[in-house]
Image (cartoon, rainbow, N blue to C red; front, side, top):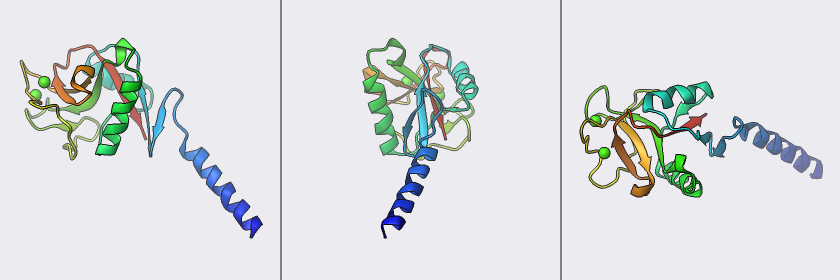
Length: 152
Ligand SMILES: [Ca+2]
Ligand SMILES: [Ca+2]
């Protein structure tokens, strides 16, 4: 019995070590790894930068994941780079139809700030802003913000 328990624990610890494997500097939550890159770049540059880290500009599938990201951003709130971050959402292909850039799948979960997305002067890229409690807001894709990358 003790031997079986030991074997079982061994398997569990191997599984945990395999599944907690995130790229250096990334933080694990459930099945994914997340990192805020401390640079300010346009949305298109943010897409490419995440790819350079074998990651994607982050997408959000659920309220629990959204809450984790909000917490992550709040913990780093002293850094200027993380007052505003780019996410992987865009409506640049069809105005008003929001999709995640890497899959082109429409949003299934959203957490827009009240009144957003407002497409003010042509806003097609999804950002999270500290002054909006990191709720979702469309913004101009040329704006320079920090990429939030996600790896699975
Ligand atoms: Ca738009
Ligand atoms: Ca907006």
